[in-house]
Image 1 (cartoon, rainbow, N blue to C red):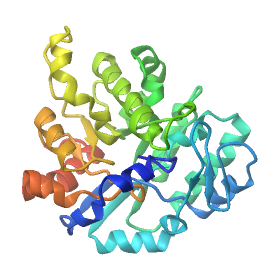
Image 2 (tube, rainbow, N blue to C red):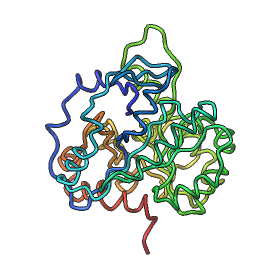
Image 3 (tube, rainbow, N blue to C red):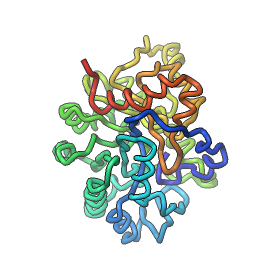
Image 4 (cartoon, rainbow, N blue to C red):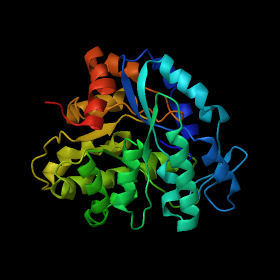
Length: 326
C-alpha cells in the first residue's frame, strides 16, 4: 500500500494485476496514488536520518531498504499514462509510513513544505491530499491547504488507533468537516519486527492499523463528527468483513454510513466482491496504490458488472470528494 516497502515483492509474486486492466469508465477517479515531486526527492536525499534516499534506495525506520523505480516518479510519463487511461482525477499522497509527520519540527517542516509546494505544481490529472504534523496539528493549516487546492487531508491510521486518540485528533478532523473536505485514513509508520519478511509491514502491520482505525471510528467517530466524509485505504484492512462478529459480541446493529468509504488499494476481485457484500456498492471507491499496485477496473467488472465498475470508479469517488448530491 505505500512507497514504503509496501510488500512489493510479495504483491509481485501473488499476481500480475496488469493482466486485469481494461479502459476505465470515462471520468474515473483514482483516490490513492503516489508521485513524488523533484523538490521532495531532493529533500529526502539531503537527509542523514530516516526517512532518506540514497540515489533511488529509500530508507525508512521500521522497514527494510526499498529500491524505488525512478520511472514511478516521472511526472510527465505518469500523467500521460493516466490521461490516456481516461482518468479525470488522480489523487496522490505523501505516504504516512515514511514518518515525516512525526519528525522534529525543523526536519518535518522542510519535507512537508517541499511536498505541498511540489504537488501543487503537478499537471492534470493529479491532485493531492495534504498532510499535517502528528503532534498538535493546527486546524488552520488544513484551511490553508484546502484554499490552496488540496482535496482534503491524509491522516495516519495510527492516530485513530483507539477512540481516545480519535478524540484527540478531532479538532483537525472537525476543520475538514467544516470545510466540506474529505479525509483519507492511511497506514502510518511501523516498528521494526526482527526476523520478519519484507512483506510483513504491508500485509500485517498496515492492516492492523487500518482495522483499529475502522473500529475506533465505528465506536466514536460519527458521534464526534456527524458530517465528515472519511475514506479508509485498502478496504480498511477488510475490517468491514468482521461486522458479523461485531454484532455477535455486543456491538449492536451495524448500519452502513453514507459518508464512510473504503478504497480498493492492493486488493483484487475477491476482496472487492466481499467488501460489496458487507457494505453494498456505494462506499467502495477506486484506490489503486499505483505505482505499488495497479488499478482493478476489470476485476470489478468481471465480478460485479459494468454498472458496479462505474460506481466504484466514477460516482462513488465523486460523492467522497463532493458529498451527496440532492
